Length: 334
Image 1 (cartoon, rainbow, N blue to C red):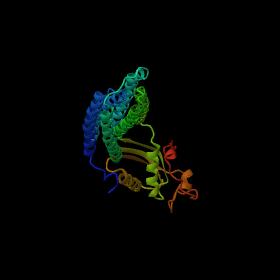
Image 2: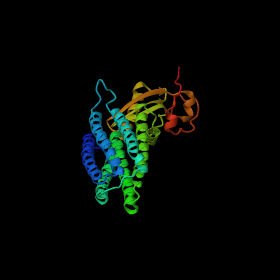
Image 3: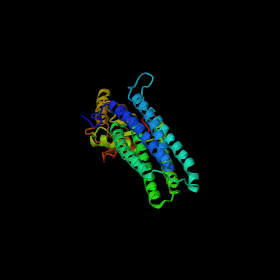
Image 4: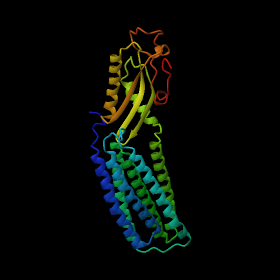
């Protein structure tokens, strides 16, 4: 059983997204309780981000359920693209939260407000931070294991909230030790800057997915798997395209084979290549492999022996890498 096939059913992603929503709602209540007791701008900024967490977790749950649906006649490539929309939506909400925090806190740097019940607020915030840390790590781990961009984005968002809480805690501890009240809104603004950067990265990742931006790591990974079991008749590959959409991996390329192979023999070679990729990416891989006949100029790269069509001696087989395999090579007769 391959690593991909060993992954849990998409139901696990739904459970993880549901847990994120439930825990996010609980932590939202804790943070607003801490704010009501202290009046801290920094804690309010943390609570405002938690509102975004809950909204984003709700959207993540919907997108995970939708992405798990199999391909149909209207969506032949599956429904996983919605995860890019979810990640972009969450990134946008993070940016809105960061701007709101700066709007709320910047003016208070020059007109600081004394804080009350600071010790109780610190305890509540520290507890919420620990819970968020465990939740964020679990979501990122689940997202990578299930290849769910939505869960990964949600986990990174939660971990951003942990950084927010940690920054707020440090600022409030300094306020507690020094009685310098303007440190509270100043820390809130610094944390907001980090939130804005995280939101930008999520939106950039979502945009890359929606635009089918090349994934060099995935292309190299495919070339490595094929090279490890390469046969002499597999002269080369070109026009390699690959992208991930939810739990599905779409791969298409041209496989160069000896031109004297029969149609049946060429089909058998293509099937062997497909078996390698299915073993690596599971039954949800979408493969389209086109067989091309070799040309005389490719004889030095061909390891087929004997070969009735050989015009030049074999020298060596070129290594396959994503950047070169993705290039187009002119086919005979064109």
